[in-house]
Amino acid sequence: MIQLRDLTKYYETKAGRFYVLRNIDLDIDEGEFITIMGPSGAGKSTLLHILGMLDTATEGEYYFYEQEVNGLSERKRADLHHRNIGFVFQQYHLIDDLTVYENLETPLLYKKVARGERRGMVAEMLDKFNIVAKKDLFPNQLSGGQQQLVAVARALIINPKLILADEPTGNLNSKQGEEIMDLFTELNKEGVTILQVTHSEKNASYGRRIIHLLDGWIEKEE
Image 1: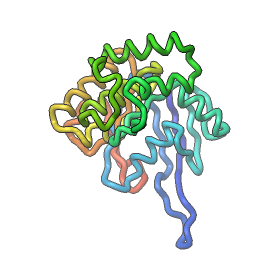
Image 2 (image 1 turned 90 degrees about the vertical axis):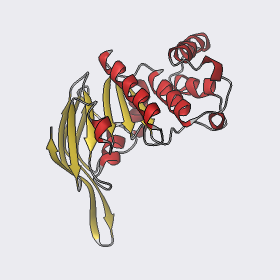
Image 3 (image 1 turned 120 degrees about the vertical axis):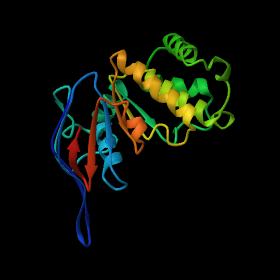
C-alpha cells in the first residue's frame, strides 16, 4: 500500500540544515494497524503529515498504491488525500461554526457527492456512532469524547483506505479513550489500514507493529 524510500525532511536555517526525518525506509501493507512512538521532536507528526499528504518530504520517495506522491502537484496530492485518507487529530479540528451534520458533510462536498447521496451517507454515520440526537449541535456544545466521535465519523465518511490518527485520545478521559481505540480495532478488522501516533503504551498495544522514532531516524521496530 505504502512504500517510503530514503524519505528525508529538513529545513534550511542560518545554522545549517535542521533535520526532522532522516532516511526513512518503511513498507505498510493494506490492513495493518501500526503505531509510531518516540519522544517529542522525534518526527512522529511530521511523518504522519507527509503520509497524509498534508506536507511533503525534502528528499526520497513516497509511493501510495505504486503512485509516486512527491512528484504530484499540490492539487493532485490533495485529491488523492480526499479520496483515500481520513485524518483524526488530538484537537478534533472540527469546524466551530458548523453543526455536527455539516461537519460530517464537509468531506463529501470536497468529493462532489450529490446532495441526496450525501444525506444518506451522513445519516448512516450519525446512526453508526449513535449521535443522531447531536446532529444540529455545534462542537462547543459537545463533550470532548463526543467531539472525537464526530471527528472519527468525519474521517470515515469517505470510506478511506487509510486512517491516520495523531494522539487521538490525548484529550479524552480513560473510558472515552478506550472507546475510541476499540472503535479503531473494529475498523481495522473491517479492513481499514490504521496508522496512529501515540505516547501511550496502552494505546500502542492495539497496533500489530510498533515503529520507534528517535531524532528523525527509525530506531527500531517491534
